[in-house]
Length: 440
Image (cartoon, rainbow, N blue to C red):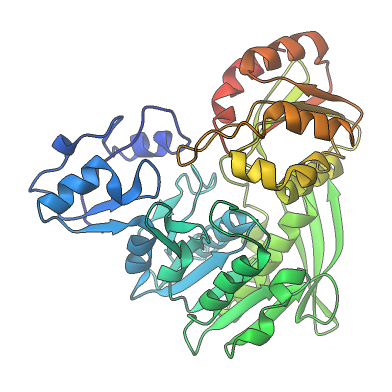
C-alpha cells in the first residue's frame, strides 16, 4: 500500500516475529512514549497490553496523532474491496487461509489478513493485493476489553460472510451462548444487502440464526437439508478426501493435504464461497490440494528417532477433539502423546468438564499449568492440577507436568520410536518446541 510500518510489543517471542523480520518491519520489544513522534500518521493498537490506555496510544493522543483499534483499522482497510469475512468460533483461520491460497493461485492477487504466523504456501499471513477481493478473519472477541466490548467483527461490512460454527468461547467477554449468537446475528445483518451469507447449517447454534436475517443464505453441512453437503469423508496418512453433493448431485471429489473431518468442513465452506464468486469446480480442486496449512495448525515440526512432533493452536475443547480425531484418522497405528497448555483462567474454569473429556483420541495426556492472559488477574480457584485431576476421571493416562522441565523429564523416560507428540495451546508452548524436539 506504500505505507511505512513499524511498531512495539513485549519481549516475548511470537510466531509473527519471523514474518516481521522477513519483510524488514522494525519493532521495539518494549513500550515507550518516546516511540511516538510527529512523523507518524496513524497508531493502531490491539486490546492487549492496556489497549487504548497503553503509553504509546496515550502519547499519540496527546500529540494529536489519530489512533485506531485494530478491529476498526482492519474494517477500514477492507473498504473499497469485495470483502470476504470468515467468522466462527473454530476454523476461521484455516478457512480464510485456504481462500487466500486458492484465490492467489487463481491469479486474483487478493488482499488478506489472517490470524496466524504464516500461510505456509504463501510465506506470509497478510498481503495488500491489487485484486478486487479482501479476505479477513472476523473475530467475535472484544475490540478493546478494557473500554470497548464491541465485537471486533462488527467493524467489517462484507460482501460475503462465512460462519463456520458458533460455540461458547471468551467467557471474559460473553456471559453465555445466547450473547455470542446475538453478536453473530448483528454481524449477519451488516452484510451487503446484495451479498451472501454462507453458513454451516449442521452446526446447531449457527443454524439457529438463519431465520434472523433477510440476507441471502447458502448453507453447507453433513446433515439435514443443505445446499452443499459433505459426504464420504475418508482420511489416510497425508490425504483427506470428500465428496461435494449439490442438490442431490455429486459435483466434486475434493482432496486435502491437511487432516480431519473438521478441515473437510472448512474446505467445503471455501468451495461454496468460490462457487458464489463464479469459479468452477475444476479450478477450485486444482489448487485445494496444494494448500499445506499455516503455522501452528497441525504443523509438522519434524521427525527425530522415528518420533513425529506436531504443533497446534487448539485451545478450546471442540478444537482439541477435532484435531485429535484428525490426527488419529491420519495415524491410526501411532501412540499419540498430547501436551496441552490451557490458556486463560476464565476459559479453563468455565469449560473444565468439556476440556476433561476432549482427549479421548490421545493415548497419553500431559497437562501443564495454565498460561494466563496478560488481560486477566490470577484465579486461585482453577489450576492445571485441577484440570489434570478432572481429566484423569475420564482418561486412563494423564500426567500433570506443570512446566517445561517436567515435560522434558517425562519424554526422556517414556517417549519411544513410532510415537507422535502433539503440542497444543494458545500460550507460549510453541516456544518449548526446540527443547522438546531434542529431548527424544
